Image (cartoon, rainbow, N blue to C red; front, side, top):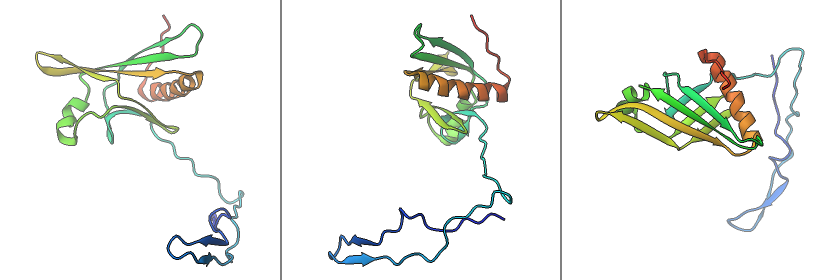
Length: 161
């Protein structure tokens, strides 16, 4: 059993001026013991989020895209172009709402872009192209970590041309 008790010292202040009447507010010293963690009995909880792509927040895209990467010669920036043929978002968009952007979600957080274009054939939606621009080596590295996770989860292969 893990025990996490206590109030961090930066949360409870000994006094503060009230915005309402100018009087000092005294906060009593906490009698709760500081945070304790017995590493022999428990370990940190690690939440793993399955990497996914969404066009409507909360609705996972089921179609696996074709992804093309470009990188500048000096390696400082790059662009990823995602092409989805008959994406599943077209099936659910009438039920859950409009496409709001391009969201790549994994255990590190969310990468997003608003550069999303739909392709229509004979007046019917046929595909989506989304662009994600990386302006720094750090953004490139973060994107590549997402792509590695997404590729492993969905069976994509990297082919260098």
